[in-house]
Each structure stands twice: as C-alpha cells, then as structure tokens.
Image 1 (cartoon, one colour):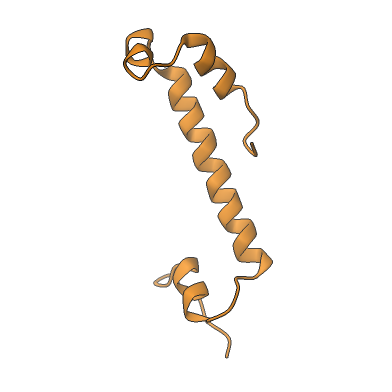
Image 2 (cartoon, rainbow, N blue to C red; image 1 turned 90 degrees about the vertical axis):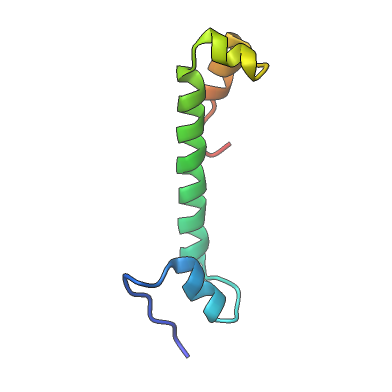
Length: 73
C-alpha cells in the first residue's frame, strides 16, 4: 500500500509507516539535509572568534581547514 505524504506528514514518518527500506529518493533527501547541516556548522565554526575557538580547543587554522572541506565530506 503506498504511503501518501502531505504537508502534515514528514518524510521520516512516511518511511517508518511503510515498513520497508526507504527508496533512493528519501535517502537522497536525507543526504542533502545532512550535507546542508554539515556546511552550516562548518560556516558557524569559521565565524567564531579566537576566544570561542580557544574555549572549544580548536585553533584558527583548524577551523579554517574544517570550513574549507567540501560539503559531502
């Protein structure tokens, strides 16, 4: 039985209710979300000042290197 996804149903809920492995579309969407979040976090890290970087034990060079990584890694 196909699962209908509407504005009130998330993709994860739809996948869970289908009782089968998510299709490639859902896996691709999940991958896109993860890449976007990773990119956002790296940008936020690059924007921290030296005082905050020191608090978390990261050097400016390490923050720059992390922020320069491609979104898929």
